[in-house]
Amino acid sequence: MSALRGTAYAASPPGDVVGKVSVGYQGWFSCPGDGAPIGGWWHWSRDRFQPPSPANTTIVSWPDMREYARGYTTAYPPLGNGQPARLFSSYDEQTVDTHFRWMREHGCDTAALQRFNPFGDEGPTRDAMTVKVRGAAERHGRKFYIIYDVTGWTAMQSQIKEDRLNRMSAHTASPAYARQNGRPVVCVWGFGFNDDGRPFAPAACLDVVNWFKARGCYVIGGVPTYWRQGVNDSRPGFSEVYHAFHMLSPWMVGRTGTLDGLDWFHTNVNVPDLADCAAHGIDYQPCVMPGDLSAGHRRHGDFYWRHLYNATRLGAQGLYVSMFDEFNEGNQIAKTSETQASTPAGVGIRALDEDGTACSADCYLRITADGGRMFKGQLALTPDPAPPTGTDLARGRPAAESSHVQTCGCANAVDGDAHSYWESAGNAFPQWISVDLGASTPIGRIALRLPPAAAWQRRTQTLAVEVSPDGTAWSTLVAPAGRVFDPANSNQVTLTVAATPARHVRIRVTGNTGWPAAQLSALEVYAA
Image (tube, rainbow, N blue to C red; front, side, top):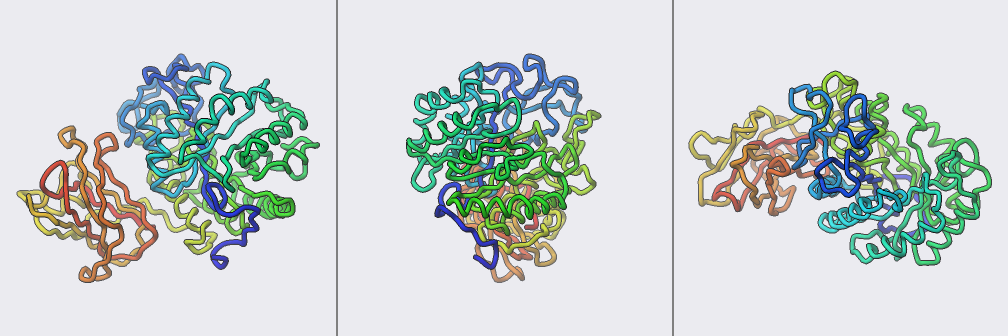
């Protein structure tokens, strides 16, 4: 492992944040009619009681909406493809479940749920979101913890303790609540920042940190970039506060938008930061980010990969991805509009192909998955990402099958038509379908689909993925398991795998709860 990544001088052994990829999760979007107590277009609009529009918005990026069961029509112009411009609500349980499924599929170990001052009108909605996040984490085998953002929280010193005791402490009983060194994890973000929104004195901040520690918590500090020196974004006089935390996670969003800038911060900030933490027995969790899409920082993934590479070669104890769903600042890794066809027309919102390179909606989730494997020593340490992987390698390639009925042959699964499909002979499992990619390619993702029509109701197909170099000798890549095709998720199943060379890919089906035959409208294969 030491040959694949930097040497980590950990004060703590691996747990739910040390040795793990954590993602910041806002969960703060609501829409009229979703049942959220706060009401309105929370965090979508500046005036939340009016629908979001180009003149009334807080976002700079547009989500890919294809896997959300429910969308809410905005006052934005229609998408480039003519469809209404709709947005999701975080308050819909299916939204949270979809997000945590994406986390599971892409190696996001732990979600840090942001919690701002809960004593105003946001409180009931934030309380309910915690319950939804807890449930989704439990269902998908993820961990979560609370991160208190103290921005604008005037009575923070007393109220943060009250909130922890009376509201949030109950959630630590969940098997999904993150623990490190046997202690429940909590983060306090904002101490020491040099701005008017966080005016707290060092004594008040130190009191809060020690209060959490005295109650058995593992306490992370979300601190300024220049915390160690007490300059620029950090006020002086906070050294004792910073060194009281178990782990430090310095902020990086907005600090640079270039590869050279990332390398400068690595050398001049991160390396001496880690040395200071090691000298004080503190774990170090640098912030890594995909880049601001609205400002053109992303470079179709090169920026994000460089940040992941730098944190890995540094030997950091954990990673904090900023952020999962931050469409407001444009640094989200959640699925995002691929082209102007799925973005409101003429309003200047950039899609993922903004620099001329095609990127699939899940591009930054997949980079997170590979970056996480690199961080954990499962992939070689490399400064350069793989080439763009948004192309379906199976599209139009020769396909084969065990059987089919009527006109439902195997070519239908690789023709790019969502409505045509392959269907095997009935009542005769197992059945299979395969595709020849033409050359051996390291594959990283397989997407399976059924037609989107309403007649295709929810069903579970038990299937395995097999690969072969020659179409004769097969090995199992993904073990047999029930895979749910649900119209609420666009009747799609995505399987993310460790990079595996293969020329032939075969899907072997042994059961279908919706019809006594194997069925697929799409067999898509993507490079690692």
